[in-house]
Image (cartoon, rainbow, N blue to C red; front, side, top):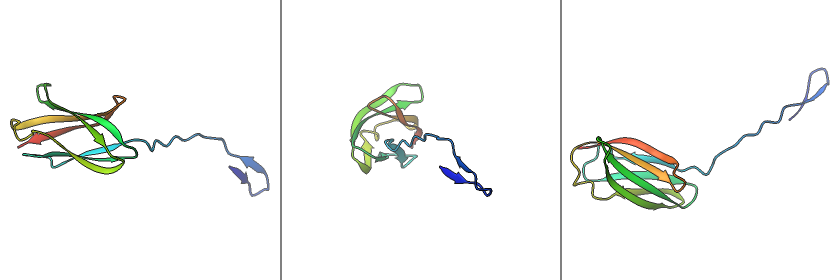
Length: 109
């Protein structure tokens, strides 16, 4: 940036690089606590595949699904949650690179 001081001197500011990561996906759980339906809402700049895991309080994986997330806003339901025992679970969503998008505690009533 070019700057003129009050005394007329010319100075340039330092160059600073800024990285804006607009390619990230955002995810949130809808309906927590849940009973028969566990939904995840996504906002994604591109179509992409995510892996969704449901883990019980003991660390046992009780569900695994792969979803294709559309560009823009979308919502997906985790299948077969009505059969789960009441309790606390962790829902974990990762992208194709293994980066964690969501790691959230959910409660089955």
